[in-house]
Length: 155
Length: 155
Length: 155
Image 1 (cartoon, rainbow over the protein chains, first blue to last red):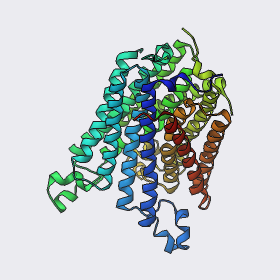
Image 2 (cartoon, helix red, strand yellow):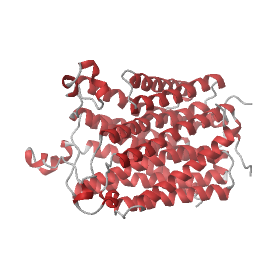
Image 3 (cartoon, rainbow over the protein chains, first blue to last red):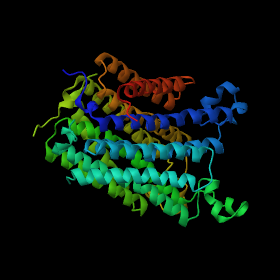
């Protein structure tokens, strides 16, 4: 049995794999940022997470929401809502035979837009920074979906 | 190097690609519906989003939750919870060698159920419309997972 | 046209398919646990869900949040945040030609960690049970991403 598959030898697929790994790692980073803010702001979601602050009411008061924590969580959810379609549609797009340069253009713009979106959300930058970076990633995914449906449509 | 991959020439995979693109685009549409309700209901999640309504307290009052916005957001999250398993398990299912007609049946029912679910959630239709459409999509994904595990089980 | 694709004959891919189906089914289970707690705690998110409890104020009071329901929902969201990267990066990893034994080690540890995480969240077990099981799954996904980027990096 062949150890590696042919798919991974395809350059467009290699580009897809690279950028998918990057944006998924970026999304995973949001968990660490959330944890950082939960600990520094002492704002936890579960009673058992505050046990190290003592027992009873002295610990319970740390089960609360905090604006900075909620901001990161909104950014994380926005990543899920946008990176999931990119990963799914991007895979189909990579398999639909696009030019390497066109594919790289799509993947690079998407990854750049999502990284910018995270900075715009967390700093936060004044609008329309976040709105624009969100739109660019959205448009790239839409463009890939169009290419996929044009290539494979089988209803 | 071959420009397109063999995978995309497989009819079952073409059907998978078509319906995955459709349900992911449908899920992405929820972002636009959320934005529509946030703007018309003037209910935003971030202070920087209300800057165009003026400064200080006159703008701050628009950082609030609204029942219509929250409804769309619940529908969007429900999409994530159900469409992610469809995309992941559906890919494995498409590669497990099902009959084209059986595969199309699964994909069509799932896509129909999720579109119905969105209407049932947003209008909203009286229960059990939403519950039933949710169950149908859930059952389809379960059926595909069963076929996958029957074909490949390697623990 | 070949009915099945070559991919599914690859043992590493079979292992990926098995564990991806398992963790996605586990994630889907969270919907049923949420429904169970919503019904037993009588805590619903939508007015139309409480119609069977009567009309007007007698039903409206069941549109509320409940600590047990919210706990399951946090567990479900944590699954989405962690299982989505596993499914995406795991696919690329499976295609990058790892040894079967190394791949199985990654997949088994991830699946075990996420099942433990769910029990730690729902029972709940005292910390650091949940934190540790989360970290293990996170580290496995990170390790797979490292292998993917080492193999395919095409920026």
